[in-house]
Length: 359
Image (cartoon, rainbow, N blue to C red):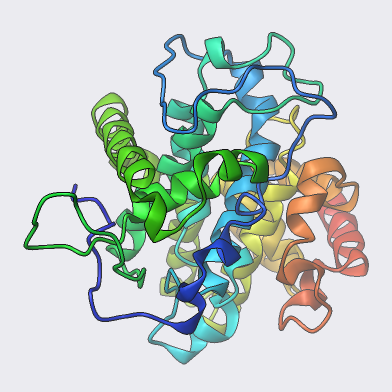
């Protein structure tokens, strides 16, 4: 897979003149520690630490990972570095906001991170308490969202070309997009030590770019990328929804509503302890938020799906911690959002009552 850094040579926007606008706070990657617990690496050194994390460690890391990806995605889209537009007005109306993950970029990146980015030797033994991801882990996280983005949007980026090689090169100037993503996952003090994102720091940026390419190769050869991006729970929920559309159970408008709130329940479930949601549970929880949810759920979902959906609804009502922070980033916390009436507190309480009558 070709690196996305050699993208569209013609597209450039005013926001690009200062790319730090998308990464001045580490692309929204908040520190999840009250005090540092691991020594940091050199800003231009990516170390491969082997030894997979345990299932419990992976589960406990998911809330921070999703929050990181959500901030990253929001900032890149807001600064028009990544384009998430749709060609159909119905999809635009419901899926245009980055929070709904209309292209499954965040969901796919989470799957890649769960399978590849977390190494036991890079994590503390107890991941249930606040800690910081090492720089090596954060660079791997940057690569996960990069690969997911390139798969879903075919490198539909508009990074400016501003970097030249030391030796003459016919395809220069380069965007160094991969390096920018890695740089965006650095904390502000690390960005300062790195030398900033500017033409004068081209040597460090070029080195980081090369190291990100190495990570991309490692990711592509280490895990089943295609399966993780095309068969995760959110995508499978879409497939089940398509069957309902094809049968006439829901129309296009309702389908877009449901698709827009499926990620809400995926995020709400990530409290670091709960089992990861199934496709049926995600879709069933979303359907129960509709006025006609009882009839649809009773016809299209079994007792197991309804029971798991009930747990998702309860998790959404009681959401806190990093999952709550993620849901507060975008449209789900915005009363003006077109589908807010389906995810507000009252709607969730009503849906939970309906779910209780089905199980």
